[in-house]
Length: 156
Image (cartoon, rainbow, N blue to C red):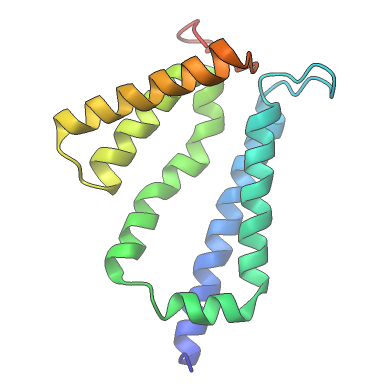
């Protein structure tokens, strides 16, 4: 059985994740155009992902068994990696409106590789470029998913 301090720290951690997911969801809903069900706007899928993230973190926060079992397996390195990833959750919606999907994806992947996984810089650049290219080809070119046009970059 987990100690009460483990349960408390787990609840605090999930509460912080829930708060940041709520901020990201609010950012997506307030800064991006959603369009309608027949013609979704650039913010539709981003809002859906943000809302799903919020729902999952709320579920984790409200499920004591998940918190107790999960916190007992979290290491300090895991906690630091999550803490380093939190800015991405909060900054992605505003970045999408300013930079567009392509640039935001490239920067997010680069940050993820270099900061979170500590991948070598050359591999990070290759990975970020490959993921960004894949997302652009699949979602923008093949599926024609509407994505925000960056106000600073002028690209999707």
